[in-house]
Amino acid sequence: MKRKPGARRVIIMGAGGRDFHNFNVCYRDDPAYEVVAFTAAQIPFIEARTYPASLAGKLYPDGIPIYPEKMLSELIHELRAELVVFAYSDVTHEQVMHTASEVMAMGAEFAMPGPDMTMLKSKLPVISVCAVRTGSGKSPVTRKLLGILRKTGRNPAAIRHPMAYCDLEKQRAQRFATMSDMDRMSCTIEEREEYEPIVEAGFRVYAGVDYAEVLRMAEGESDIIVWDGGNNDFSFIRPDLEIVVADALRPEHCMTHHPGETNIRRADVVLINKVDKSTADGVKAIKRIVGGVNPAARIITARSHVEISPVGPYPAGWLNGKRVLVVEDGPTLTHGGMAFGAGIVAARDAGAIPCDPRPYAKGSIRDTFAKFPHLSDVLPAMGYSGKQRKELASTISSVPCDAVLLATPVDLARLIDIDKPAFRVTYEIKETGRITLAAVVREFLGNG
Image (cartoon, rainbow, N blue to C red):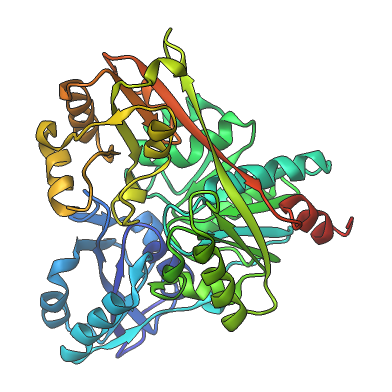
């Protein structure tokens, strides 16, 4: 196979996930295009790499270089790019259009491939769990769905949105069924946050870089697929039932972020989460938005039930009046834009006093606080590299506090040494209205 004369020169903008997927399904084997570069944003340490030839295909014997997104205009000029493809998520509509304006000012075309171009077709039934924003609460919904499906006698598996942070060739198609699988693959904290709770609950989760291979692997061991979305992206696999999680604390974001609004408009079911932490006005606002753009969608309301479990000998009641360091899910706080998560909620419920970790932050953790100034009394669990994991551990050790609340989905105490009393904070969803996930699933399976 040879590239066609005059093939369009393409740059794909991404964050180590949808960018690679869109390339694989839309451009990899099409000789009418020549992808000359990827650009990387949002995730630390993913630029200055190469998308390897083994994944890039026969048209790219040298692979494809990955550059920082800040070089975009320079790259369009130097590489004579004619088309720039935007392929990542959880960005404001305003940011998307600023990027489009930058691209067009350089003379290039700006494109955003949609679901029909990028979704793979499975031979199995597929339920997708996507969201309006990062941090809305997709993961508890995914776990609950897997449990519901198992009780119906099904053999479900989760396919997780990509988290391609390490060796891309080794991550081509991954299967996680035990904790040792994650140890063997040297998963980052961010990867473990997504995979570990599913595996702890007794289910398999599949992920990787080439989702045609990932899908084939999952189909070989399952009879139904649950797509577990990342950020607020839409599914890579064509769903038969689309569930979208909205955050009652951020109702206005239903219509302000890409591609969260796409998800709201496509949803079969909108699950409004955290209704117990929001005002009634927030819930009403989301219902009003959904009614305006997708009136056929069914609405489920749910609260986020938070629990504190001691890692050591101290009971949860010991926390009353104590100064605590709250460690929260990293992506929720960073590009998700949240100032707090379940850990702060748990600290307040326990009568504990969250302390400010910023003066004690080390290395790249200090840089994270500088980049995201909305953070104060929480520590994002950043662990995209071994060095950053050590900096996180050093930061935790340096903060003068009585205890540490670990509110990440991963059991952080397994990964780093914590020299203070530690407590895990977990959270599950509990529906509050007449419509439940179990009822929706029964109806979907034809048992309603």
